[in-house]
Length: 297
Image 1 (tube, helix red, strand yellow):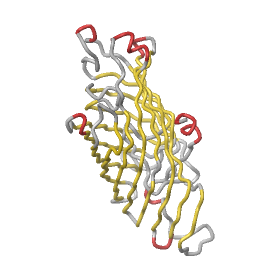
Image 2 (image 1 turned 90 degrees about the vertical axis):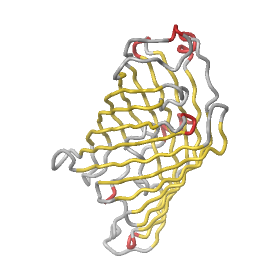
Image 3 (image 1 turned 45 degrees about the vertical axis):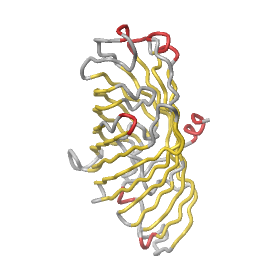
Image 4 (image 1 turned 90 degrees about the horizontal axis):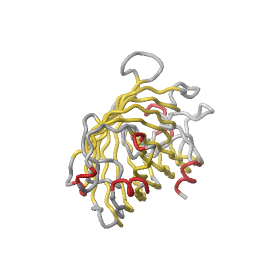
């Protein structure tokens, strides 16, 4: 069900300067009006968040050798296995009510994704997959925006890794209520803070989560197209004793829309350190660098 929903969601969000225009298409100042299936969300998804619903692929390798999330000496590794992480998903705004004259609006949408990780060194065996879907409610007033998002996540381990290392699956799942706030300091620079509370959780889960980040998309490295960006996402989870997980991503947007701003496709470099974003392995620490691409964000 989640995979089917993810395949149906295709949307390209717009940068801060384009989210609300002071005039409508006829050139007249507008008041509140209703729009169905608009092109963008008032509260765009986070660029560097590993759990952002998106469609794309990244290939990565640990910066140094370490141990996987497993039990016993037979599970220790001294190599640096190359892994690939695939994601199928996106977000879609269904309804929006906006006042273009005062740059204010509220919207409602749906997002979904399946994020799966494969071990290339083990004949492309699947380690695990996270399934998620949510229903974001966004609000914007000028440069300030907010999002309330009830969402579901469930985690599944691959059969091959169970037989190879003898590690069983954990019942990791949650229904979370998320609240985020963002501010656009300029059309290119945005910062955000985010927190989540688990309304219903599995046995290994704990309820609280916190997150913050910053994004700079525009003329970062040079002037003119293609647009480049740098983004950092920082996350803390109660179930990992509030250990800090940091994801830094930098790249450039390609295949932009006709107005030159809609980022339909991006290529990036990424560095991550902290507990694994794959929630089937909450005790595993990752330190890796990788390269990838994503569509829609």
